[in-house]
Image (tube, rainbow, N blue to C red; front, side, top):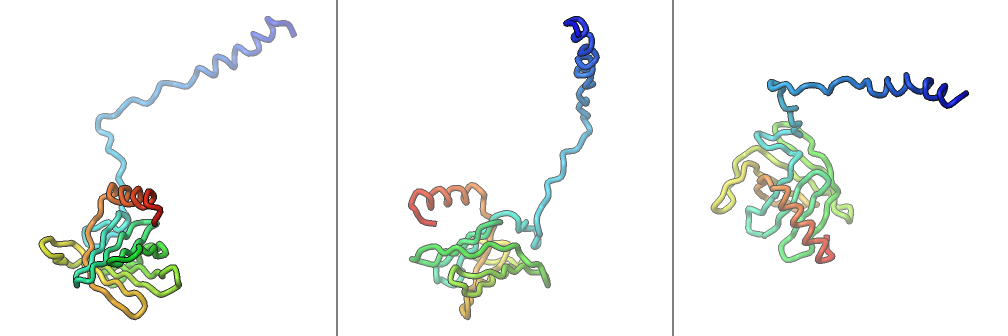
Length: 159
């Protein structure tokens, strides 16, 4: 086949390649896609990070987020619990998990206002580790705080 024949054979393919049509026009009335939320407990989206804090004076706290449950006992090394999704029943959420040593842990959240000193939290919490139970309060935690905490843990070699 000659060069001219090759060019003529490829011409229809080149013309088809340019046939993509026009890009769709922007519709000023188009709505933004809805942002999916996770399981809700009252007005709180449980797919977003929460900070649980002691309400009885023992000084513990906990980060509860998708893929991360980190228990911080007062004056001790933080303990990661196996991350689980919440189980919704009877108007509350529970997170059945365990310590790294296999001790049973249950975190229960209820949509009840919880007074935490001079501020209020939208959820009350109960943390049960083995036979011990602790009362606490839970509030939304900005994702920036989780990133900050992760950065500090990485820099200190902890985690």
